[in-house]
Length: 356
Ligand SMILES: *Cc1c(COP(=O)(O)O)cnc(C)c1O
Image 1 (cartoon, protein in one colour):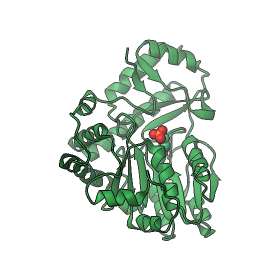
Image 2: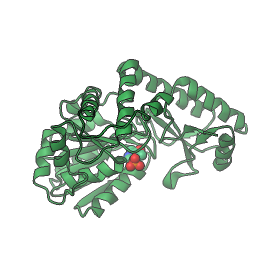
Image 3: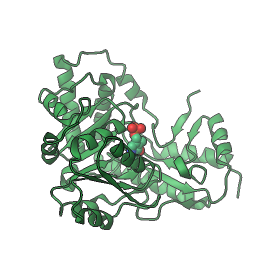
């Protein structure tokens, strides 16, 4: 039996998308591929509000997260760490042999403009990494306010992970001045995993040129050269790019405003459920994520037992991530999920949960 996914990634994939993946294969050096690639790129630029470069990488998000560090950190970078994925990103930067400092923020708290300003004012850094929506803790950091600070530091390249937020709300890449925006597709985009998308500003591409050790697979300049021919440096995951093309069509058919509104509605609905059932919130407002809610298990619910019961009823449930597993649980509201899906899921949770 397929368990319907109510975990924060990978998320449930629409049958139409799975079908798009069954499109007969083409060669990536055939004109058919260039046409597909170009279409995806053009649609993506509209969705991301960018006139800059958009590249497709055959990897999960961390491939490009590592690649960005290798391509864009010259002198030293600062990594803002407020959850499992951003903590890991700092570790990755160090493993790549980069000079990197972590600014540790308590889990559940956002990265703030003040923290960014403090770090960059030292003049020690030429790059910054941060995660917009920390999926491990359900915190969404205030990007517009952080972007305003970044504008004071034009020599700093900003690398922002939007894996679990891109397309759920407006993230205008150029207006925010994000030099490299990265996301995988198995979360907010509701595609099967294995494809990552990233942007590169002119500043980012200039930076790469002076940096040694960019490697090959994630060399941004290789991507840029291939882009001239609407192509990728090595063989891309063509089936997933067909799926992405279809998903972009579906996103525009829904309408961006409507999509953003749906995510706000779902977030409100889940937060109300959490509150009414007597659970706490791991994140204070206004930093609660629009794409998942991280609840504190204040009722001491036996989460592994809940997970098991839900599994038997055909639902995959998440009982927390990393060091806050068991203490918290997460309910996703991203991708193609609709209010009706959440109502169905939460009513089953209600049936299974012992009353307080
Ligand atoms: C899931 C996730 C990642 C890791 O992505 P992979 O696809 O596993 O490489 C990175 N950042 C965020 C915010 C995530 O949610």
